[in-house]
Length: 335
Ligand code: KG4
Ligand code: ZN
Image (cartoon, rainbow, N blue to C red; front, side, top):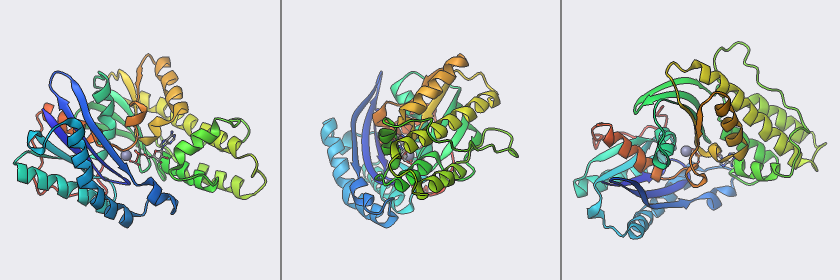
């Protein structure tokens, strides 16, 4: 089975082809990043993003076919992200995929971007259900108990910002380039994580494992804008990264106790899953609870289309029928 996936929900135009017969093979994984375009604005400009997806998409498909040594006629299934994300980008990917599917008379699968992130570990390793998902990206933060394809029980989520969004905003205040998460991590490598204290969100009135990052962001902003510590940026980055990741780990511990099934592992996914400190903390937590820990390889943590093609294969293998060609894009699609 040869599956082509398209991802264009934010600032990456991505196309991947996966072959899944006896083994899972990523034949191509093309990512055309728009980072240099959006960098100058300090964040993604939706209209520019959509226009650039339009320019890049055909070239990405051509390149994916070339690297896979295939032609369009060889492809068995076509899939694309239809949400959540920026509507202009989603439309470019979805309309392209639907056009290909119609023209080639192949089934079309509409894929949820969050499901793509969530299932990436199963493309790379043998990860059985059920597992606890910690999904931390630039737009989302979710704890969910995953018992099967399509069986997702949300245990907690962010009450305000996503973890990646919060790191990006604090990075900007520190004068670091967009996207900030990875630059905070780099700067933090030379800093003291115990130099500054930030208040751990208590969420006193909330039971469960919800998270909140906006208070942390405000205290970081106050510290940075006070101007007293402008020569201590590495210590601020290290202390801030440490509190964010420790807080996520603390709430993950609560999420483990909220699972109703016999979970075997903790799965970390989304762009923030590339963070080595968080990977280490959750790995230790998993060990303490006799659980396994999985996160995608670093090159598959951020947005890519292999995760979309793979989510399509998971749906096919689970016996889920193709999507109607009229399936709409939904910028606010939930898991
Ligand atoms: O999943 P993703 O690529 O896009 C969305 O679906 O949102 O996640 C992007 C987020 C950004 O906020 C980025 O700063 C963050 O992931 N990120 C990181 C790291 N690499 C990317 N955050 C912390 N440490 C990293 N190494
Ligand atoms: Zn993403």
